[in-house]
Image (tube, one colour):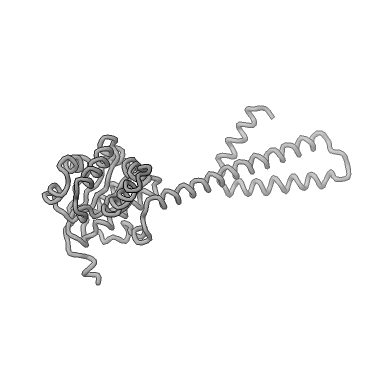
Length: 265
């Protein structure tokens, strides 16, 4: 078979669905076996030799294409699983979706967050989301819902509370080892900092937060932030340089309502 015919066969095979390839493999193999049985007690004719070689070559190409697809699927599933595990979304937050959020409680924030997670426009420009409002209005739920959609789309996310981020950084700094976690939160495509404002700020926490936010600001890497603090309180809590950058690199969405956790209890 010449190269042109070989490439034509491959194009035809690659256009098939997995099920079509399996069906064609079965039919090709059955014809190949029938041909082998028919010549078991005699010599093959030139035409039969040519047909047998064609069938074997065809079956082999079908098998190779299916194997490549299966390996690719396994690799994709392994990568998706690794991305989700590294996102640090626990069992509770993996279940937080747009579908089980009561949109009527915060329709504007819901619509904005859903559009943000489902499209590339804002993320590609390094723009994030700042959700603020009283406790229990659904800020963390929407942050987790955005993270889940982004993960489904293959976007790497790192999700945790501000306190937990700081604790992991403190452990890393105290061990005097490599700054792997610091490097990770600075460079992950989408960083989620939940519930900022609970930890007492120190010179060290302000310095580390500035390092993270400034790096992400300069490299157009978005951050999703939730806080119970209003703009004035948040500005007072954060270093002015951090707050200024955060304002520029996020869309601020206020969430109003009663504490859903209490009304649910």
